[in-house]
Amino acid sequence: MRRLTSVDAQFLAIEDGKTHGHVTALGIYDPSTAPGGTLTYDAVHRLVAGRLHLLEPFHWRLVEVPFGLDYPYWHHDPDLDLEFHIRELALPVPGDIRMLSEQVARIVARPLDRSRPLWEIYLIHGLENGRVAVLTKLHHAAVDGMSGAEILGALLDPSAEGREIEAPAATAPRRDAPGQLEMLARGLVAIPGQRLRALRGLPRALPHLDQVPTLRALPGISTAASISRRATRIRARTTDGGVLTGRGLHAPRTSVNGPIGSHRRIALTNHQLAEIKRIKKHFGVTVNDIVVAICAAALRDWFQDRGELPNEPLLAMIPLSVRTEAERGSYGNRVATMLTPIPTNIADPTERVAAAHRSMDQAKQRHQAIPATMLQDAGEFIPPALLARASRVTTSVAARLTTQAPVNVVISNVPGSPVPLYLAGARLETLHPLSAIAHGTAINITVLSHAGRLNYGIVVDRDSVDDAWPLAGAVDRAHDELLALTA
Image (cartoon, rainbow, N blue to C red; front, side, top):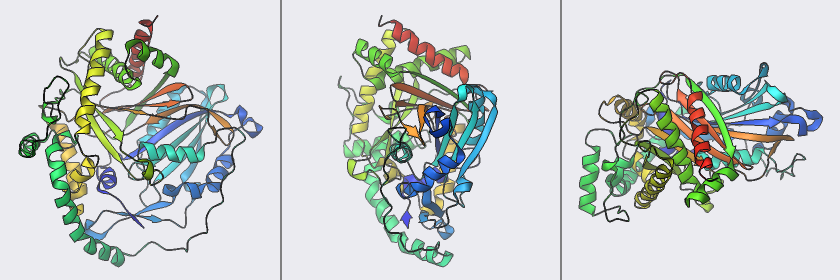
């Protein structure tokens, strides 16, 4: 069995019927390249069945420790039921992209069944022009962005003809899930180690607690972190000699920074990666800088239309992978977060790009001063028995504070394959990442590059935002505005 880390366990702990801890990827395929010109349920079922030995998290079933004495464990499920996990449905023909997004939003809003391995695949027929969609849904407790990409890499091929798959190793002896007494014993044995990890992680985490999105808005956290920084003389300095701390990063309160509901809205868009590179070359910045500038312009436009654009810049949380090359294939979470103001307060597009570049540079400097294990160290303070309740309480309290939000929006840029990929022979045209939202942060914009395109997946809380498509339209306008400046 495999024990979850404190970061893994927090993605389970935050779930309360409204916040969900899973992430999804929506691929749209051209089935004309597949055998017979169709992508069928049987073909997907056979492909997954033949590659299960490459898809380790597909076997993992959650086993809880009694009384929450320790974090849960993953147990290799010997009775995996693929017919439960792989599902098929159809839109009314011809289904357009908005009809697809509505169906996907309903699926995304449903929690995964914890009595089974935490993943699902949906084959969705009925799209216009004969296209087929495949939605892959995985729990964040098992995979982060990079390890999720490894899962997709195991399912997809570089050609329509497929590839040779290595034979599975010798099957391990079947082992049923451990009983409650065994898990209780594991929990009791683990208690001394929990205290040791908390003591070891305290000096590393305390000076940076105001960089933890779920904690930073709580009363007293900024003061405690600031005092600890002074005591340990930790400073993250900018190039102009100023001192930047998490306490100085302000997230203005907006209508989308309160408690969320249980339903979602989704919008999708994509642009040519060559155009993004042309823009970044024109301004002499990075692709990430341009993505942040586009998102900032889109959010500025969108909030202005709602009549609630703050005078100060919005604060974004940007997830980062800290997975090393040696940790590839280990799954679980190796992540950090970077907080950065985004220039939603700047009207001029050229000045906005320059401000995004400066802000990202400063955020990287702050991030370099923070231990890569900071999120895990911070999580170790809370005994496992209290983790679920504490996680829900902190996110709920932070979402209800009237003075400041923890962060305003999540923006993530995930690298994908530069070459075309195929599923059971069907060519993948676009791949849209759809990530999670939580109390206090009702908008998530995740971007993934694939085969010359940059694909946006926008997820919002339906109670806060009744239609996500105007935000996708604002992204398109922001892209076009910058592209026009390169002419």
